[in-house]
Image 1 (cartoon, rainbow, N blue to C red):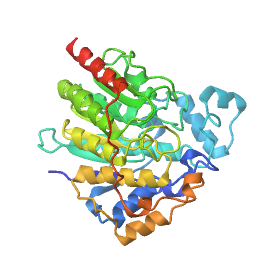
Image 2: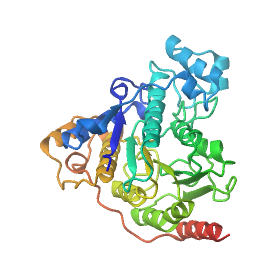
Image 3: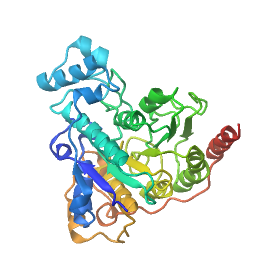
Length: 377
């Protein structure tokens, strides 16, 4: 039974999108340090990512766009014409010192993962599982950056599975924002089942309930205030049955942490246990599983959430109170937002948030009914 693998890279520790950009916080590096502080990473379970090559990126992205990102990194500037054409240096997609290498490394991690999973016999009773928290950039377009995403690693990972001959690949997106780049890439491809749980009415203002593509797109736009019991209902009564019926040969789960109650850029009310339980419920459905990162803009909530996902993949017991090395690591973080000036004590001492229970609202029940209607059709 293969142990889960973790793919990361030191580039996330040493690069920044600059200033007060939401992604200027340490995320992948803190998660990696926290996993190690807990003693949860055997050397054989770690793989170092590498930047995807322009040729690899060109499986989805246009060569002229790839060249423009490379040139902007090299020159640290971009012409007004190219800025508008490629949405670079604007719209939350700044020009910065590693703007090609950093996102290309995220893609590289997802491609390494896909190839490793493809090399593993699908007959194994325990699914092959790989976690690449630097991935999950689900907004990237073939020739434009979008939503802090310069390249689209979920699309490229799914294409790797399809190019290898798989005929059923599932994509589950738990980020608070609709996975629009992935949905657009596969909306007419019946080989891909794409399910997105996201906040209704939030940027990028897509992913309505009625958008179905070729029939394998399922959007679950939840109103603000989603709690753990609503996420559990969506996973157990909609996403799980969809996946079981589809029988995927590989599955990609995007685990953005921006639907958590402590995130500053959304209005959902999830605890991190909601995402952990979602991963736990879905992880055995496909013989190949790639789990990605995504959004998340509070350094403490992201690190604690993503570390807990690694624990779920490994069936590890989480401590009620973090050991001293892990607590010290979390106390060393800083954050330039108001909430970072006086963080609550549990951000330092625990991995697990208090669960957020309550009724499943009628708006969420409507989503469940819609999925069931489509499954019966």
